[in-house]
Image (tube, rainbow, N blue to C red; front, side, top):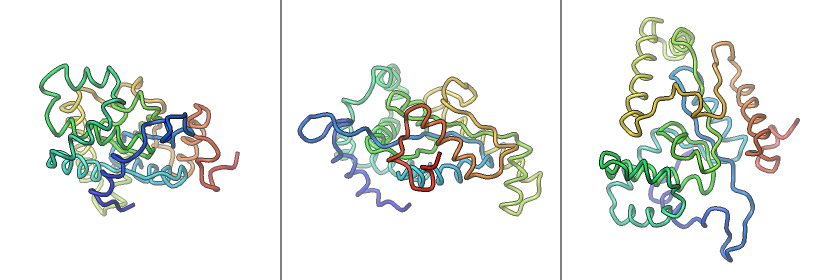
Length: 237
């Protein structure tokens, strides 16, 4: 789904405070919010796109999140406005991460967290960028899609026309880069299962629609996806 960066940022600035309508009364429950961390070649992107379609929310991949954060970082007035909008939603834990050490107070990190919090007001499927950490208290269903280097490399080789050795090297390099980014951002790694509500190894799973259906079933069991949020194809029992 294509988004204009300016329009998207302004949309979330204008959005209503989480869970309230304009009169201050409790509004309807928020739209589903999903965060996903994944290994390269494990099918995360395909699964995330299906989830977004079935949940009728937007899909925010890493590229879009990076664009949003960089755009916000460069516009001081926009950053201030967005920061004022989401400050009331920041949990004590998030504040401790951001303010406990000057290392975390770079403009980019602050902008990224503000963008993630703003998106959470209207729901969505958010890929990477530490969303599973920063949105853990925002009702997010946190998913980890993983796979062995062998199986992921085979998928990448078939999809990108690489040799299996080339694909294996690419998988390992990209996974390492993602881990380094997460560590530099918040000193976390994705190998801690307690950071996620559901972890799926796709080595033996190849039908992404069925994997997405598994996730939707788990979300319904957790009370984080109701029938009115699902497209017709996902509402069947």
